[in-house]
Image (cartoon, rainbow, N blue to C red):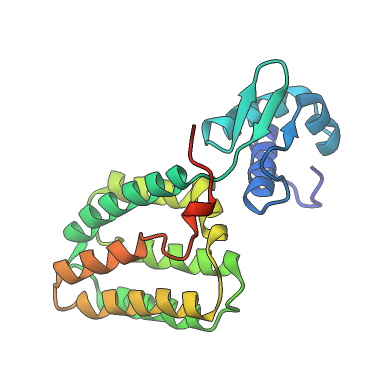
Length: 220
């Protein structure tokens, strides 16, 4: 776990972050066994923070505890994708409904700048596309007066399953252009107060059309 930079966070938090990141980026493949002793030795830490970290990873749906065998990395399932998009779509609709008409000129400029930057990205850079897509959607609901709603949506974007879904997209210029086009359509509708248009486009943003969900396992 040595990084060369001091990190004051509890060790279990740092171990969890490392394990979750390795599952999200595919370093730890579905079906990989995560045995406490082996993980502790790999990261050079004691078993206690690893035990807590693995329990958190399981709570997030990234792994499953198999009695007597330790944890096993889960597949990303079509149900995972459906569930995350369903919740995000419903909450984002509510947030934008409350935010509509309240965006400042500065926020509008910032939204446009995020789209412009998104279009300059490497079409194969999943990490940066995720970062800017998330930034656009959170900036979009920034004027929403319901703090708990904003925080809940932020936590969904931060969830490892959401990050894992992003990496499941068929990346490329066509996918990138589609997202940018959707975001520009939302931006154009904002000053006009066209909630119906924004809601419709958000529905496309939450449609996993570029993910072959038929090839993914279903949750048993």
